[in-house]
Image (tube, rainbow, N blue to C red; front, top):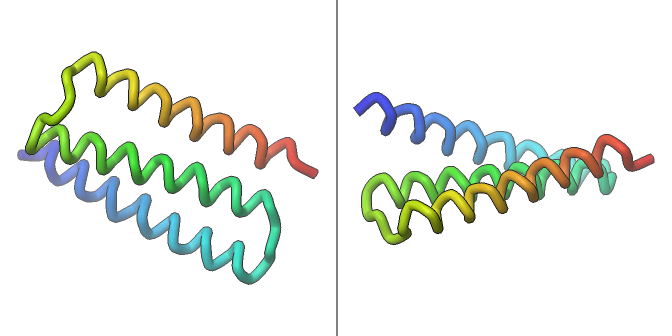
Length: 86
């Protein structure tokens, strides 16, 4: 039960941060902010993936961890590039 509330909070929080970052990109036009927006989109997508898995279980456990790992690589790459971008 508590894990459902935690996943719901993570989804709402990541979606809120994504909306804020997209708004910030529209105002600033900076590529760094766009990269962070993409990282937040991946984080939100990962949250959706885990939430769907929690209720429906469409993936095998191994497939879920591979998809989760790919999301993590994308998130870390976008943050890394945003930090290093001049």
